[in-house]
Image (tube, rainbow, N blue to C red):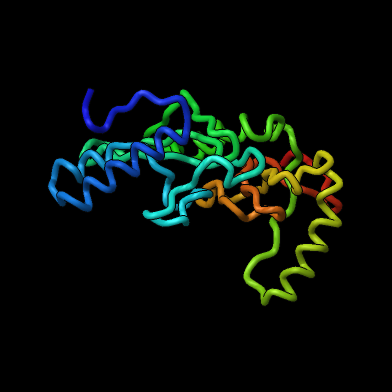
Length: 204
């Protein structure tokens, strides 16, 4: 077994392995230790749980409910060198499916939501949530958004960190973490679907 491979029971084992390799890299600063660190699974830089910093990786109990995140590792210089898989910050579940190539990160996000929020694929496409305003104005606009769109979602969906689905243009299809009111993902919907006034769906 190479330094980058590890038998794992879940997220916490993978992160403990990453933490150990990070210590080795800081101590040795060798090319071998750098490659080993790149090839281990860790939380993708833009995903929930990534902002704790190198010295404080997420641990069991930090999240009180199932919360979708994405793990990655880097096979550089191989083509499509970034590999992704879905995971859960609440219970430590990790997907058996890994993805490389086009849409790989999005596919891993979707795997994670199949675990954390079953049924997300069937929720309606809603209007984009507000962004970029001063806090007071932003909070007011979020309240208006919630009043309009939350009734179309399952009860308590946003409070449980549930994702929303919004229609996107062809070149803006990344699933965005933290953009949904409640802190969940804003998942890009197929651009053949749009929302009507009042949140009703229709096909183009």
